[in-house]
Length: 394
Image 1 (tube, rainbow, N blue to C red):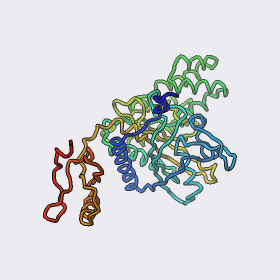
Image 2 (image 1 turned 90 degrees about the horizontal axis):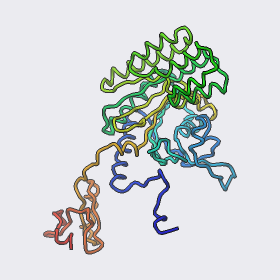
Image 3 (image 1 turned 60 degrees about the horizontal axis):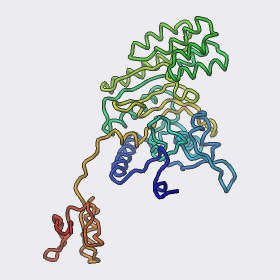
């Protein structure tokens, strides 16, 4: 291994340097304070857990994303969290076990075996909020509003909200009556929005079934999509109308409170289909091709922990948020202090630091380059004055 190799990081794993780290920490605190103001309580799950609980209930995708190792104490398999959602579900169901509605939020590093997108990070800093114990559309609306408030608090605008409902696809699938292998091929083609592959997967289906499923591909766009869906599914897949009505109600509520947000419907959105049970949603902003935040309803995930609970929530990546924000100008510089144990000086430094100032001990001949002021003794008093530039550059 060369000396150059020693400094390299794995692909998709980044370090955050001081200026960006300071901005990221400010934003993290700002967002957690936002969640607190909405009544969401902070939890801090562990970095690793037994895979028995870490991977349960959220599908095979999470299993593939998770780094695994053997615990030398128990011999059981541990996983480094790739998603904090199942951990928070465990906390709600088992550790807290509260009755009624529980609102929890979290922020922490995660690790992926591979990036979810070609340009994505393998070490996202995940922030999110989860609402347990309420199965109403009002709970979904609250989570969506909080997701939008997250992006607004981060200074982002021109937000597009993508709404879908897994109940639409589920109803169409039930009406189609496909074999398991054919159903898997259809699901894969719809996920990729590949019409040729979808037609190939349905080559052996009757014309009515083929038309019913293929119609999903074009059901995306503005509110007119919902009316088209009602016409298409009212006879062949009437159960889909329940999901379509839910989408209409949620969109109306969001539009009333956030008229600045563009709403886009995608009735073939299958992200998380194998664990989501209702509404799914994502937020997009210009200049970022992937969803910046997403979430959905995932009822009964707590069943594996002994309590089946309605649940809805969302998550975002702090690193992705930071990448879209303008670089902040550095504010007022720091204050240089002489390396002295003078009690009066130390009292003055303590007061300045308590007031929010950065005071840096000058250990050597030159002050820290961040300093633009210094503490100097004048008439027996320690006073802040402009830094002597000759001293700073000597």
